[in-house]
Image 1 (tube, rainbow, N blue to C red):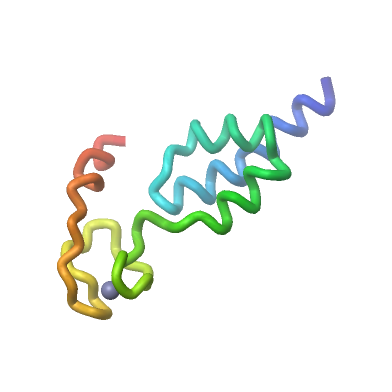
Image 2 (tube, rainbow, N blue to C red):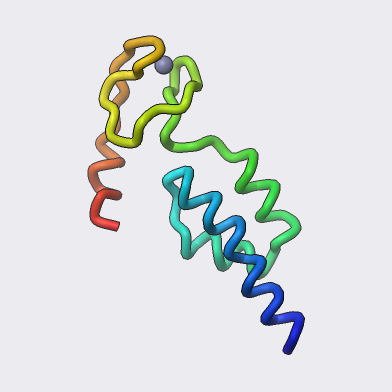
Length: 84
Ligand SMILES: [Zn+2]
């Protein structure tokens, strides 16, 4: 019982990291609870959705144009996620 509780608390970490990168908290939370050892490094190395696909710099989630390289970023996906 203690181990399960511990896993449920640890799962929050990859969930929070994923959330910051614009991914589903719940999906990554479950992944973190079940496979924390894999989910944690996976969440850390995964590419943020809030990243310019051309120059890889971090951008504002609502940005339409990259502030660094000034290229147009197609972000229709983000509009769908606003509801979250
Ligand atoms: Zn850029």
